[in-house]
Structures are given as C-alpha cells and as structure tokens.
Image 1 (cartoon, rainbow, N blue to C red):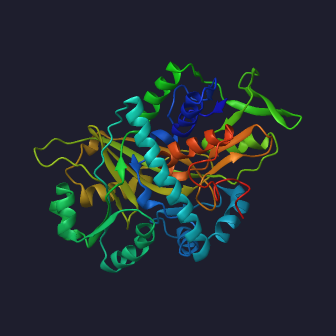
Image 2: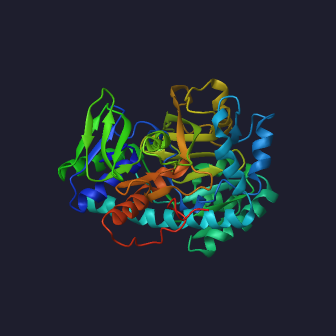
Image 3: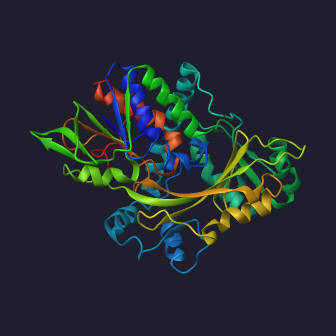
Length: 416
C-alpha cells in the first residue's frame, strides 16, 4: 500500500508495480496530484539543490518577524508547535552541514532527473516538458558575484552551468531581451528542465493501472495498526481497514501525523508557498522557452503548455492554506517588472499549498519503525525534481536491492 497520490506516491507505485508487486494507492483527495504536486513551479532543477538551512538563514528568519518582504518567513503564532523542528533547522545552519546537505540533495536530484527522463521515454509520457535549461537571474552585481561563487559547488559536482551577462541572458531567452537592462546577469543551468507535474502524475497513474495497480480516492488514512513489529493494516476515514504486506508513506505534510500512530517521529514541517497560473498572452513576439528563478525575489516561473506558472515564498504558518492578495505581492512585482506582457494577468488562478520540509533539506527515504513501513516524504519545494529518484531508491530498498546511488543522508538512521 502506498499512502498518498501526489507525484511522489504515484512514482512509488510505478516502480513497485514494475517490480511485480500488487499495489494499492490510498489518497484522501478526489484525484491524484491535487495539493503540493499541483502548486509547484514546474521546474526540474538539480542546479538549485542548495539546502535552505545555511549560515544566512537564521538572519533571514529573524528579519521576517518584523519585515514581510522576505521569501523565507515564520509566524510563531500560527506555527507554535515548530520549536523542536526549528531547533533542528538552526543546528543545520552552519557551513559544514549546509555543504553536506546540499551535496546529498544534488546527488538525489541529478539521479532523479535521469529517472524522470527514462520513465517519460519508456511510458511515452508528454508532460509539456521543455529541456531548455533554467536561468537563475541576478539584478545586483555583488549578489551576482556571490551567486557565481555559490554555484561553483554544484558545477564542481557535475552540474553544467554557464555564467551569462545581460546580453547572454537575452540570447538564451529572447523573451527577456526587453528587460535585460534590469539584470546584472544569470547562471544558466543548461541541463535543468521544466514540465507539468500534474499531467505527468496522472499519465503515470494510468500506466500503473495498466499494470494492475488500484487507486482508492477520497479515503484518507487515519492511522496505521501495528502488531508484532509490523504494520498490519491502515484504518481509513469511515473506519474501514485495508491490509497489506508493505506500507509506503508518501503523504507529504500529513506523513508525520500518520507515522506517529505507530511510534515513528518524522521531522517534517509544512512550508506554505503561493502559486499563480495565467493564460499565456499571444502577441506575435518570441515564445517563452526557458524557466527561471529571480534570485532576489525568489520567485520562480516557467511556461507549461499555454499557461505561465509562477510561485513564491516559503512561510511557516502551520497547516492552514489560506491566502490574501497581499501574499501574492512578490508574484505581482515580478510580473510587472520582468514579464509585463507574458500573460493575461487578469485571468489568474491562485492557490496556496503546504510543502513537506525537513530541517536539513533532503527527504526521508527508507524503512522506519515497524519493519514493513517505508517512508518517501519530506521533499519540500523539490518534490517534482526528486520524486522519481526517491521512489526508485525506496522500491530498491523494499526489494532488497542496493540503490544505484548511496542512500546515506536520506534515511532516518543516517541523519545526525
């Protein structure tokens, strides 16, 4: 049984079904990929694998208590239960641990991108993917210089990235040529890509169903029932229980609550992000092709088919997913400043969703607690980037195979 039908849960089901298992996926929502998987930036971005817990993060969080224009924010009144998670986060905010966590994320993200490409090829899945790279844009020359030094880490570990001046940005993405004077330059993640994670997940669901997998929607898991060191069944909304031989917990921000019912503590907290989707404006000019991140505002965007997706912020406010017009201000600012003619901004669709963040950054994979319980959760804002690799690793562990990349730094037992 796989608990959760986001992109992580469905890719878990896919690899297990491919290995010959009978798979049932249980999801509390009415269809696959409706929460965090539907509100992401659409970027597959190994080049942006840096751990959030860094030497500069505590200052950013403190600043967010008095200034509301920061991209990383915490509201202690709405998220009062985060003290333990917060202390673990602060413990990771030194240079040595930030380096280690970044390299763990990078290793997984690079592997996962290869697995994503393989699945799309094997199953012939078109998910509006664009393999034209991602631009990490800088406005301030000093920040640009610092960004170049920072990005050298991932370059040194196999990630192809080019440094572009403003003219180079316009050449790589002609859509940005009218605003090149506002840019100091960019780091161009040449092999990064983008696509529609909802489209990918639902087409992969169909592939799973062709292999005999079952999907149960509208029935959330209330608790797991364990006896004799094993999980025996999952109790669903309404009181029904479903049994299985192996359980994979991929329920995003709800994974800790479910895991606690069998004594497993998962250090995962909800980080709320905002996303907006607009119809692309057809004006006869060049078509947007390269996804991007504004490294000052930390707003990300890409074209997904005939739509423009934009996302911003990471806000620790508990489990609520409300939003106000004020919460969209960074998206509005970016749209006005760099992409004024890109989309029909009066026809936007908006949402807020919670992304499952670990204190150190990498997701939690592998066995935990009862011997037949496996975790595949905690991917934060990189769920689409890391889903396929994470799920392949978990499927390998379930079947007793050695994963193709080291699992160190990803399991609960290999963390400090």
